[in-house]
Image (cartoon, rainbow, N blue to C red; front, side, top):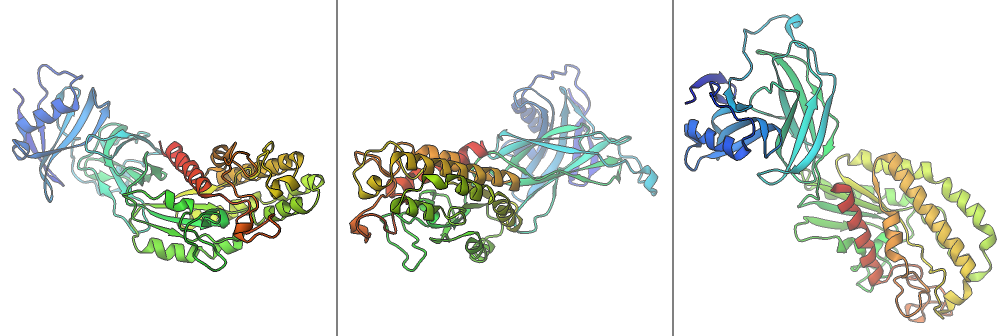
Length: 456
């Protein structure tokens, strides 16, 4: 038999038990929950039991903290099961009145996001350096959003230097705080870096920023009119999911970095409507800043292979500008998922299409344009890494291989020249060098793949 004891605590009664004579350190979380129900009246029968956290693994935990909960929160006590026995929480000596009695702050707090919680959501393992003289540690967490979120402190001090906590929202960012205690005396807290839980969050808000490649120019859907050419078949709309709260397409054809910055204000207003919602921001920018459309147009008009070195230098010089631009977005929304998009190769080097545009740009020039595009994607990826955001240029490029403009047999996902779009002499028109409907889907697939890879 296990003898129970009740000790006053801040979250109701703290229920503990004397060590059992046959301690089994390998019982599971389910065994601990069953034993808790047997000893805690509020958890008996259909009462709800919450596993607050544990040390070790779910299959063979060494320590478990449990509490009984009702609709309004905790209704009973907290029990700590340690290595097969129910134990008292850390000792609670009299409150000290001098700072010299306070345990020193822990030096570091590390967080490792984990797999799925038994309640849905995710788990996270928090570990910290020891504090001399501490009898336990109060661990708190808070959801990081544009709103001011309160700290949620776990119901009893933890006597270890590592603990697995649950549940946390999938794909959301959290901070953790560890505060050493010596009885009732609390030391100064130490706060972790912001940590993102694995997975893609639900009910997110999505803002698509950028140039014509994000606006959807080239799609067959309804066009917004005006100079922005926002298209209802834009790839940004293909990222919509059934549980996404809302999408706002703000990209505008022809936009450079300064013009994309003008899209920040409507983005901020959009996010402000739901300040606690998860946020996704995508952006394609850089192509117009380096004049990529100009070099494409020049190659249509005349031989252009000799200018490659100048264009490569111009692209390289945009890296610090792009990094500063991405940092500005991150500063505006520090808890959003932000992805910088890249550009396809545009023209298939060995494609045999007889489109007039493809005839005018020969294979060596197409290969040069491909190198310029690849270099621009590399610079975008490096700038994104400098700014601490994600990039997707390589995945977009890979998605279009074998489907760029000038691919023969109707397999191209990039528009070449066509009179029916209002082109001049069948060469260049507004949709030239931009994704078709199939290309919009390929873009969406590239971004979606990046999300899955980055968040897994």
